Length: 259
Image 1: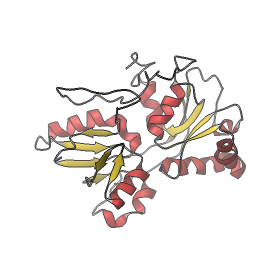
Image 2: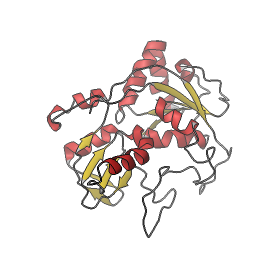
Image 3: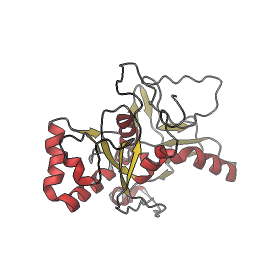
């Protein structure tokens, strides 16, 4: 399905509760969704948590590949879907970056750790530009959601970030979606150029990457909020929904205690 994008800006904040993170401190680690019921629950933060694979991987009746930034919808969405369509109870979903999901579709498989997955999606959701690159893989496409950009910062906004231009400051550590994997990365680069020209884009995406002040994520919807909460980054351009979700008490730490 096509994922239409509208670029505007907002500032929101998530908190970091500890100024010093120890090597084994994983209290903010995912998964942040509610796990399915099972006689055995074995989730080990920082080691075995697999936050972007959902549901029944064995003989699923429906397979959905969601763009990763939609992970916060999975619990309610799948519960409502199963209620409305009770014939579909074994549903498997992935919420990896859309570029990775595209490679999985084209290549026919993906390996995560020691696990190989060869399931093919019945539904794939991603941004319009990504879908437009893969017309041969879909019998039907349709827009279903809109989004806009936001800047995620630590609680209280200690760096006083007010807009994208501030991300070019040397004292602001940026968590940035890698455009190679994430469609949002390209939208953000376009926004950098709009507000600060090629100079701002190059500062954030070249100079600050080289000096370590910009961190390029592989899974920004997981890494970015964690980096903010662990005080490893000061600010991060994200989809508004990704900032709205933690701001409304849905992530651990600030929002309901440690996992």
